[in-house]
Image (cartoon, rainbow, N blue to C red; front, side, top):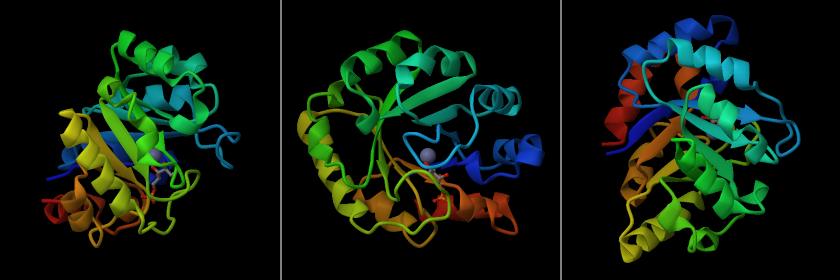
Length: 217
Ligand code: DX5
Ligand code: ZN
């Protein structure tokens, strides 16, 4: 069974409170918050004040995905803005071990995200320190992109490493997730499914989250 983390990147920003309250009522476990800086990724989403505003209405933990360079500069601010999980990109962190320890010291759960081209093997020495690994199944920067099929192999490999090392970090998949690929992703070892456009472009987002949950049993 996978947990569901709807991404508010695809929400109606003019009605953010309404959309967060929908997630509160839904079967989702987390609220995924995508932070883009226009440098690490070719797009800007929103920043700390919007994260804080979302947190004021959220009744579920914020799962914050930082697609930014130099994330160390903002960890404390995002923690104060309500982040429960803070995920940084492997490709954006020169001193990843230090960054992960810092997130833990702040009282949040540390995660590391991998771009589609980054092999899971590169994480072998940091896995014992992580609460979550986020596998990008699209190139980060935009919602609504096509799911990259190689993702299944990466999840299976990471799940194998997790078992061999006797660890219990969560595996999250982000990008192009829908009810078609959810069963196979769960089967491969995924614990958390992020879904943006599939949820928010649906006529009935609440029912769509429930369908995703069923598909990820
Ligand atoms: C992409 C973001 C994703 C995005 C997913 O850079 O990290 O979380 O919101 O959107 P969908 O589900 O539409 O691919
Ligand atoms: Zn994301």
